[in-house]
Image (tube, rainbow, N blue to C red; front, side, top):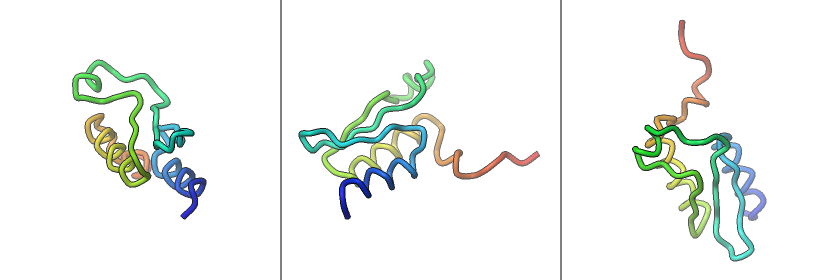
Length: 80
């Protein structure tokens, strides 16, 4: 799969993050919004990096779990 395709797929999976690949070949993601104190205390980072797309996905899953955001954006509206 091409680099551009990986970038697009990860960006679609994690819309709260900006995803890019550096000239050095590292995969990066940075949050769109500042962290709360509770999120920082939970070990969240504003920006993360990995060696490859799957490593970045692993880090993103961990970050969203720590932030209490685990796939809430995919679930749709909360029930009444």
